[in-house]
Every structure is written in structure tokens, then in C-alpha cells.
Amino acid sequence: MLLFAVAVSAVAADSAESYPNRPIRLVVPFAAGGNADIVGRVIANKLAQRLGQNIVVDNRVSASSIIGTDMVAKSPPDGYTLLLIALTHVTNPGFVGKLPYDSKKDFAPISLVASTPLMMMSYPGFPVKTVKDVIAMAKVRPGQINYSSSGNGSSQNLAGELFKLMAGVDLLHVPYKGTVQSTADVIGGQIELTFTTFTFALPHVKSGKLRGIAMTGARRSPMAPEIPAIAETLPGYEIGQWNGILGPAGMPQTVVARLHREIVAVMQAPDVIERYAALGGEPLTSTPQELMQRISAEIAKWEKVAQAQKIRVDLAR
Image (cartoon, rainbow, N blue to C red; front, side, top):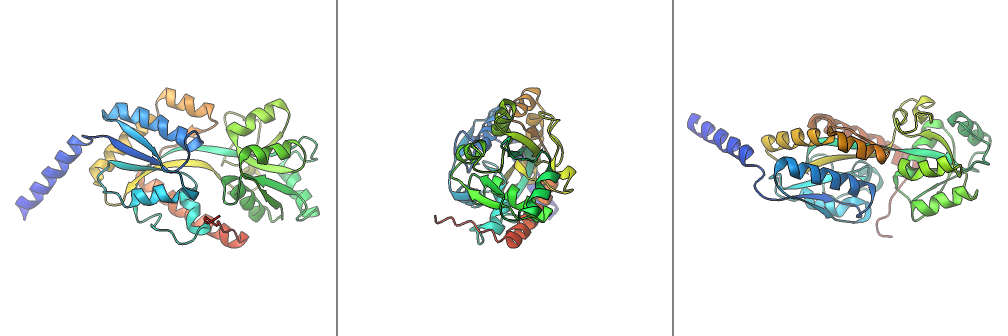
């Protein structure tokens, strides 16, 4: 038995030393050119340099990121197929229902990598300037104030529904088929409010076409410190486009440790920090255990929101 244990330890050590010895695939279950894709490609390029192997970004676009995620869950747990997750990973269990994988048990967490907040905005003529103003008006006019999003189940929709739940107000959700359309009608005054990504929102705020009311992150953004966080009025409110890296469950701990170490180094590189700042976000690393704790907590959080607000995402449409 002792000889067997020594032999296994030697194989594990050899595996850690030789990993990686061929290209790695990073599955990004979102369209090329989007925020998640940009995050994935920055990480892939820098991580490839540190590991000495090519990392191929594989965009597996599907409704709510399920197809690409399922593919990684069913891949060999050898460290050569990784997954970039976003908010959908923790909202799908509550909003979609039965999935072909378990969002917690079927994956090996490696690290958080980035976080980008959304911004609550209104057109300049709408007579609100603060979160307290929005809540006060919504209580006087229940169900009469509209907010737009890029679609049912989108992060913008979830930001609005979480706000409604925590503030105890009734806003009318108006879904569109994209951020450009949903924002255009707020600029035109047909819709009172919207929640959208920081990078898309900031130019409109700077030009005066929209009023930035508050950020959806846990704290103010260093890119716009003058705009308060919703959490300053509603403690505990937080939603954003955050990303993490997972692999299939059962990956060797030596491989997980190597990937974690290299990913943290990548995210701490000055040029990476600068790149994410330009996107309105910031690198956000974690231990594998911290990432799993976040996934578990957020799944529970969004299941409660889905149940309370009666949200269901129909992927057949």
C-alpha cells in the first residue's frame, strides 16, 4: 500500500510538472465581441504566455449560455477544457429550471476574474435625481413607471427586478431585443428608467443624453466616483456582470492550483488592470473556495428573486 501511495504521488507530481503539454480550450458561451468575450480573450492571451501553450477561445453561443456550459461539464477533467462563466451561470437554475448539468456539483472552481457594474439611468426630463427619488415616485405611482432592458432574464432585467423587490416598489418592465434599442427609447423619453452596462452608459451620461442615477455594484465605481451605489440606499443590493473560470468537476488539485496561481498573476498585471478599467470594470480574483461560495450564494439569491417576482426565461422562443 505504501509503494502504491508513493507511486500515485509521483504520477500526480509528474502531471503537475508537465501540465500543460498541449493547447487549452477556453469555452466562452457568449457571442464574440461582447463583454464576456473580451474578458475571455484578454485572459486567454496573457495566460497562454504564462503557461507556454496556446489557449483557444471557443465561442459556444446559445440561449442563456447553457450549451457551452454543458459541454464543459461533460469534458474530461484534465485541465484542457475550461469555462468562462457570467451571471447566467447563477441565474439559470432559478429562471430556466431544469438544466442538463448541476451548476455547482459538475464544476471545479478556479477563480473569479472580473466584475463590471451596471448603471441605473433616466432621461434628463424625468424628475428624479437619486435612488430615494425613484423609490418615492414609484410608491406614489405604482406600476406606472417603466424601465427597459435588453430582454427577459438579462442582467438589466434582473437589476430592475432586484431593485423592485428590495425597494418594495412596482415598476413596469419593458423588454427589448438589445441594449441599443432599450436605451434609445429612454433617451427619447418614451421610457423613464433603464439599467445598462457601465461602458455603454457612460458616454450617454457624459453627453447629457441620460442622467446617471446610481451604480449597481456594492460600492461606487472608481471610473465615476460621483455616481452613488444603489447599496448606499438599499444595503445589500448588488448585481453586475461578473466572470469566473471553472473546469469540469474532478480536475486534479495540482492542476487547479497551477491555473489559479497563473490566473491571479494575469489579473494583477498592470496592463490587464488598465484594460478592464477602460471597460468600466476591475479584476476580481478569489480562491477556488471563495468562488464556489459566491456561486452557491448567488444561486440561492436569484432563486428567491425568480420566485418572488415570478420570472421565467423561455428558451424555446
